[in-house]
Amino acid sequence: MKTKKHAMRNKSETIWSWLFMIPTTAFLVVTSLIPLLYSLYISFFKYKINLANAVPEFIGLQNYIDMFSDKTLLISTENTFFFAIVSVVLEVVLGLIVAMAFCSDKMWARIAMSIFLIPMIMAPVAVGTLWRMMLDGTTGVINYLLGFLGIPSINWLSNAKTAMPAVIFVNVWQLTPWVTVIVAAGLKSLPGECLEAARVDGAKNSQICRHIVIPMIGPLLVIVCMLRFVDAFKVFDSVYTMTSGGPGTATEVLPSYIYKQGLKFFNAGYTAALAIVFVLIMFLCTFLFLKLRSYVEEKVS
Image 1 (cartoon, rainbow, N blue to C red):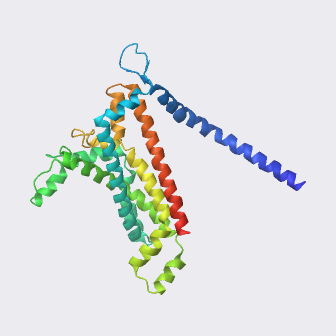
Image 2: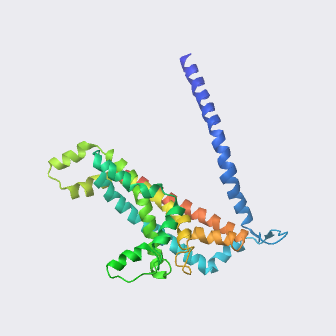
């Protein structure tokens, strides 16, 4: 009798769980799945949405084939990977260092961490606008401060050599605090017995960090890298606000290129094909990170 009641209770809980998931699932289907499927459908057509009475013309895989001869697409892809890799590496390294420095329950650490988190809570468009004005070649405050050191003015955002480093710097400045918060939480969850035993055995702080702390939070660092890489890979607002992809194609990234193809050149079919390939790249990167996390977890255990 008890087994039967237990089975009925489990069945009821399962039904209620699915019922509670219906609103969220329906929302995701309407806002994500249906647009994605429509994009896949329209990617096989030539469709200029700015033309009156435009009718989609079926061209098969031609939109995907055209990508291989699109030089701007190649440049924007290289820029996107460069931006994402450099940004994530700097953010994780700096976030780990700051998290170790501020990983304390003392009042000074809490105040310092609160101040350090300010960039993270700012809107990306506001951050891009703020730094675009600060990095202005003629009226920017950065060049004004450099003038006191005898350094001549630099056209940070209008020079192809400095535009990408400037954009990366702003992204690192804004999102390193996010990495710091996650890593600090991971550090506080480490068992104190292991660290204390290592100190008793005479291990130095650098050795404890390299051989105990980093391996133990390795799976967390992989997840942090994955989330930050995916976010950096689809960055649009701050980069577009600062440079609009310029000068030339120096800071053109895939999201801004897709945006221009769709809302500047109104090439809906090619834009949809680009978006589908973009989603596939994101899926592949996420899959590789998850495989790496499994490998790191096995190595730690």
